[in-house]
Image (cartoon, rainbow, N blue to C red; front, side, top):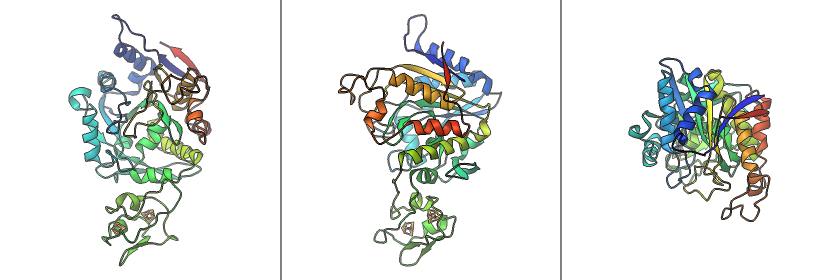
Length: 365
Ligand code: SF4
Ligand code: SF4
């Protein structure tokens, strides 16, 4: 059985929320995973422009300072997005992060985008999964000595909820890795958009693209890595979003296994169950929270942590004025919002693959 530590959001002049977060980090073992001079990746979602549900930078500053107190060298990180929003390359990503308040002056740590300028700086990590034998993890996260995942727990259109497994697995996958998680469908060239520049052919690791009057993909050679879809400057090779919710959850778990592979005993996970919006922070908006702000949780076990968060959310009444206002007593908040999604797949598969256990003891601090 895993230990999950929990603090509620009551505060007073004797103890504010930052004090409570500091106590939570300590109890969850943050000081134990960091050794002197360790490079410590703090995996965070900086929020899409227009979305205001992401974690407040002041909370992140407290975690940064805790890592520094343990002798570590913290940096904030995330990998670029597959979709073309405000975080698809490092320049846009860092500008958006600063726009949302994640500036060095606030968080007291540098920001390093894990998979580099255009998403091509990743490490292939071998794993034994049902879908993948290797996964593409942003190199800054791989080369860090320790990892602290900082998750905003909320709903998600494709996976039911977005918790720690998704923050790590989808979050630290490179852009082409994200394409592989999102689709099994091989890429197709839209010949009318193609300028025959040859960039896709240059980056294709399988030598599957021949460019004459336009690019052509040999489906016998293509292994569906997604590199060409994220490379084409004309978007002539469309991104495929044909994801089955259960399959994409399993793939996320496999990417999480890869990201944590060299971090055994070097990772702690913190999850903020606040501003529980129906959609993920990748959207350029955040609809009203579906339940009240519940608290902050932390654990060394990412599966137990997600299980504890979803149990707490489902134990609440839905809020008036939210998308669940007509169904306040539903015991499955995200199953009610996303009827074709079984969010428990990620938890069951995470447990099966040895990432953690679903049984936990919730320890209030
Ligand atoms: S990168 Fe795009 S525009 Fe260039 S050859 Fe490939 S498909 Fe055509
Ligand atoms: S998906 Fe990968 S292997 Fe297939 S054509 Fe594109 S770059 Fe080449």
